[in-house]
Length: 406
Image 1 (cartoon, rainbow, N blue to C red):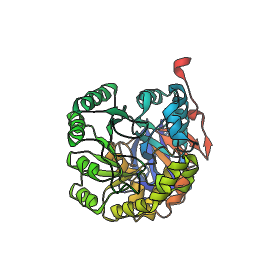
Image 2 (tube, rainbow, N blue to C red):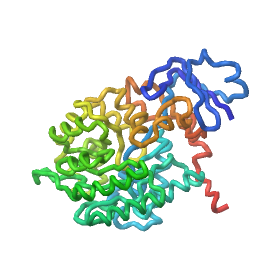
Image 3 (cartoon, rainbow, N blue to C red):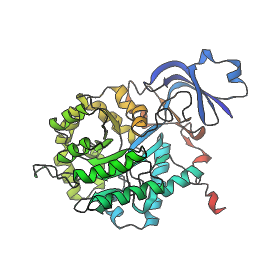
């Protein structure tokens, strides 16, 4: 079916070029063209469903670059839940988070490692239409050192263990590989950032990924681990909370290595009530360090994309924080659209309204290039030509179909 979406403003292409009174022509879940509405032809309009947004801005569906399906940062004790919950419980949490992400305007998620291969399993269900949610880029088993921290990664020691898991992830359908090289929430009194993987272990995972042209993402807040990751060819540094000036200079010298910023973990006080008392105290203690480090990184011109680290439905906050820390509004918005597509290996397919891309679109009241906070309210969501939310109302397409049970 052919569809035409017209809007007061359409953000076109990878640079989000504003097209006043714009139109997006769609067919079979793909974008055919993006033009001013006055340039629509009679052939374009013939037998087309026309959706009009006379006061809204239409832009690409957002890409969440750092998600964990089975963690929900909006729930009390979510890290402890991850540590102790059954696969069934985590699956239910994941389905809820996926639905909330989709309805918030996120049409693709880059999943940074799961227990029980949940991202790989749920990708199949989303693709089949059994579970409503964004398209999933799964990483499979996250690989951490045997002396590492956190609940999401599986302990490894030695290059052959890393190689074995990397190959297993790829065989199961992973679209990227994920390693954990440092702690997450850091100790401000320690004086350095611990590094849990050797350069050889990092290089082994990169070598395995390179064979199949897959990216490697590294949980890494800074220090020696960041230097090892950049020098060994890691594609994306996740977090970079403690990036020093030396780290920033190294990133500038290696522009092929991007950073995925998730600063809301530290900067958003609304996340604190859902952490343990000690976790919340650590976040408060490190807040200004993170604010300064990430601000320096952004102002240095380091390429970045944005993610929430499992704060489902709240990706818009990361766009606002990026602007507060010194990013232009355009670059911040590209951090959840075209630049997010680039680090995900989806350029030309996602993150931009352009011919040949998936028909992933959202509409917002206002112009996010002027006020990014308008992304907090998304009344219209479309993924691959299917409408999941319209006029702020959830559509039947966003209910679990469960075809396999019929």
